[in-house]
Image (tube, rainbow, N blue to C red; front, side, top):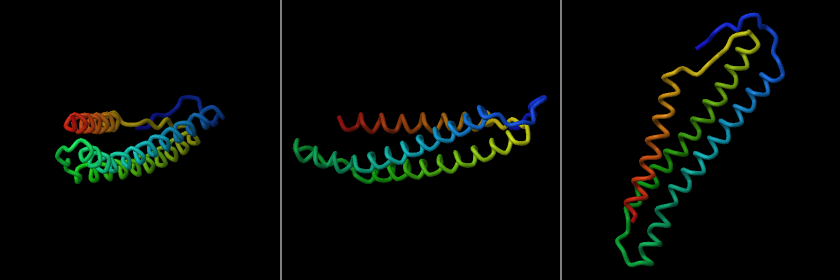
Length: 128
Protein backbone atom coordinates (compact mmCIF):
# COMPACT_ATOMS: atom_id res chain seq x y z
CA UNK A 1 0.00 0.00 0.00
CA UNK A 2 1.36 3.43 -0.92
CA UNK A 3 0.45 6.87 0.35
CA UNK A 4 1.99 10.18 -0.61
CA UNK A 5 3.77 11.94 2.24
CA UNK A 6 2.51 15.51 2.16
CA UNK A 7 5.24 18.13 1.87
CA UNK A 8 8.10 15.61 1.93
CA UNK A 9 10.50 14.85 -0.86
CA UNK A 10 13.79 14.78 1.03
CA UNK A 11 15.12 11.63 2.67
CA UNK A 12 16.11 12.10 6.29
CA UNK A 13 18.83 10.04 7.91
CA UNK A 14 16.44 8.85 10.61
CA UNK A 15 14.11 7.40 7.99
CA UNK A 16 16.91 5.56 6.22
CA UNK A 17 18.37 4.25 9.47
CA UNK A 18 14.93 3.07 10.62
CA UNK A 19 14.54 1.22 7.34
CA UNK A 20 17.92 -0.43 7.86
CA UNK A 21 17.01 -1.45 11.42
CA UNK A 22 13.82 -3.00 10.12
CA UNK A 23 15.78 -4.89 7.49
CA UNK A 24 18.17 -6.20 10.15
CA UNK A 25 15.15 -7.35 12.17
CA UNK A 26 14.01 -9.34 9.11
CA UNK A 27 17.50 -10.87 8.84
CA UNK A 28 17.51 -11.82 12.55
CA UNK A 29 14.05 -13.34 12.22
CA UNK A 30 15.10 -15.29 9.13
CA UNK A 31 18.17 -16.64 10.92
CA UNK A 32 16.03 -17.59 13.92
CA UNK A 33 13.60 -19.53 11.70
CA UNK A 34 16.49 -21.30 9.98
CA UNK A 35 18.15 -22.18 13.30
CA UNK A 36 14.83 -23.24 14.82
CA UNK A 37 14.19 -25.43 11.78
CA UNK A 38 17.57 -27.08 12.28
CA UNK A 39 16.82 -27.72 15.96
CA UNK A 40 13.40 -29.19 15.14
CA UNK A 41 14.90 -31.43 12.45
CA UNK A 42 17.47 -32.70 14.94
CA UNK A 43 14.85 -33.14 17.65
CA UNK A 44 13.98 -36.55 16.24
CA UNK A 45 17.54 -37.70 16.94
CA UNK A 46 17.27 -36.48 20.55
CA UNK A 47 13.84 -38.11 20.95
CA UNK A 48 15.17 -41.46 19.66
CA UNK A 49 18.13 -41.33 22.02
CA UNK A 50 15.89 -40.39 24.93
CA UNK A 51 13.37 -43.14 24.15
CA UNK A 52 16.18 -45.71 24.03
CA UNK A 53 17.41 -44.46 27.41
CA UNK A 54 14.00 -44.83 29.07
CA UNK A 55 13.11 -47.97 27.07
CA UNK A 56 10.06 -46.43 25.40
CA UNK A 57 8.70 -46.62 21.87
CA UNK A 58 10.70 -44.74 19.26
CA UNK A 59 8.72 -41.71 18.07
CA UNK A 60 8.12 -41.11 14.39
CA UNK A 61 11.14 -39.28 12.96
CA UNK A 62 9.73 -38.10 9.63
CA UNK A 63 7.58 -35.31 11.06
CA UNK A 64 10.45 -33.50 12.81
CA UNK A 65 12.67 -33.59 9.76
CA UNK A 66 9.92 -32.38 7.40
CA UNK A 67 8.70 -29.67 9.75
CA UNK A 68 12.24 -28.49 10.51
CA UNK A 69 13.05 -28.31 6.81
CA UNK A 70 9.88 -26.33 6.24
CA UNK A 71 10.87 -23.89 8.98
CA UNK A 72 14.30 -23.42 7.41
CA UNK A 73 12.71 -22.79 4.01
CA UNK A 74 10.34 -20.27 5.60
CA UNK A 75 13.42 -18.55 7.06
CA UNK A 76 14.74 -18.17 3.53
CA UNK A 77 11.39 -16.71 2.44
CA UNK A 78 11.53 -14.21 5.34
CA UNK A 79 15.04 -13.16 4.26
CA UNK A 80 13.85 -12.56 0.68
CA UNK A 81 10.74 -10.72 1.92
CA UNK A 82 12.92 -8.53 4.15
CA UNK A 83 15.20 -7.62 1.25
CA UNK A 84 12.21 -6.83 -0.96
CA UNK A 85 10.56 -4.69 1.77
CA UNK A 86 13.84 -2.84 2.41
CA UNK A 87 14.24 -2.01 -1.30
CA UNK A 88 10.57 -1.00 -1.72
CA UNK A 89 10.68 1.24 1.37
CA UNK A 90 13.95 2.81 0.25
CA UNK A 91 12.48 3.59 -3.18
CA UNK A 92 9.36 5.00 -1.51
CA UNK A 93 11.41 7.24 0.77
CA UNK A 94 13.31 8.65 -2.17
CA UNK A 95 10.06 9.37 -4.07
CA UNK A 96 8.25 10.77 -1.02
CA UNK A 97 5.79 7.86 -0.92
CA UNK A 98 4.94 5.88 2.21
CA UNK A 99 5.03 2.11 1.48
CA UNK A 100 3.26 0.00 4.10
CA UNK A 101 2.58 -3.70 4.57
CA UNK A 102 -0.95 -4.60 3.54
CA UNK A 103 -3.42 -5.57 6.23
CA UNK A 104 -3.91 -9.03 4.74
CA UNK A 105 -0.13 -9.53 4.63
CA UNK A 106 0.12 -8.79 8.32
CA UNK A 107 -2.71 -11.19 9.10
CA UNK A 108 -1.16 -13.96 6.99
CA UNK A 109 2.21 -13.64 8.69
CA UNK A 110 0.57 -13.68 12.14
CA UNK A 111 -1.52 -16.70 11.18
CA UNK A 112 1.55 -18.59 9.98
CA UNK A 113 3.46 -17.89 13.20
CA UNK A 114 0.41 -18.98 15.24
CA UNK A 115 0.15 -22.25 13.31
CA UNK A 116 3.87 -22.93 13.76
CA UNK A 117 3.59 -22.30 17.50
CA UNK A 118 0.59 -24.61 17.77
CA UNK A 119 2.33 -27.39 15.86
CA UNK A 120 5.44 -27.12 18.03
CA UNK A 121 3.35 -27.11 21.22
CA UNK A 122 1.29 -30.11 20.15
CA UNK A 123 4.38 -32.01 19.08
CA UNK A 124 6.07 -31.36 22.41
CA UNK A 125 2.93 -32.49 24.25
CA UNK A 126 2.92 -35.76 22.28
CA UNK A 127 6.39 -36.62 23.63
CA UNK A 128 5.27 -36.61 27.29
